Length: 313
Image (cartoon, rainbow, N blue to C red; front, side, top):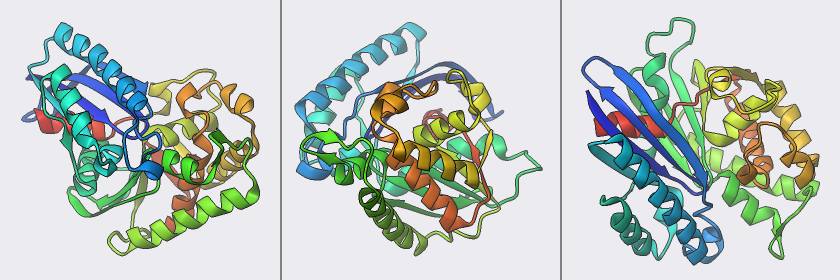
């Protein structure tokens, strides 16, 4: 048994998982899991650089995570950075800051590596499930990119494309520094056009209509699931392995795109950091379900963070 700390730093959030893991037996005991919205990818799509204030928000979260890691006595740490860090000209500033705080070199991984880790995290506990058809198509909708991974017991095809809730919001829904509230039909249509083009690209590598089960990961998917379940507060246990139909996703997406900031913020399961980007994220999810033909999506709270933990052990 190895006590590991896994950190996933994405475009919108940074997350920590500390767990006791034994790869030989498949034992996995979660000790601490937390998430902080830092919006590291703020403006990257437009400027090509990580903003100083975004870096400082991220480093503040890293300092808090370092304290948790030390308190729990994790002996191995792996820090994985995704889309925003890959894209930025000044990614070296990010790497140096993380190294100073946590004592480890952040791995700015490729989209294909990100896809592999997401698949491992989402499917290890599904392996013994008889009621879910294989192969799985794992879809991880992040802030800057979305990963598609097809496989049964191993990855058969994977592709990362540059569509995500933050990237689509900043590209199409921000005018003079403010998010349109609510966006016009034309703005939503522009997002959908970008997403459809990205799906065309993904489909060159991953057969999007060949899956037995569609598995959805990350905050956009889990938030939409919480809305579909009509939860009075965010409940990870209730959301994990819940199923949401395409009709529910369509209705929720249309509602979110008609809503104001205040109306979205009042949704009980809505994290404050997702209020302005959830509409674009839901639109990505809906487009994926329509393209794949999936009638429902199985929602997983276990994702790339769990995959990082397994790989660290």
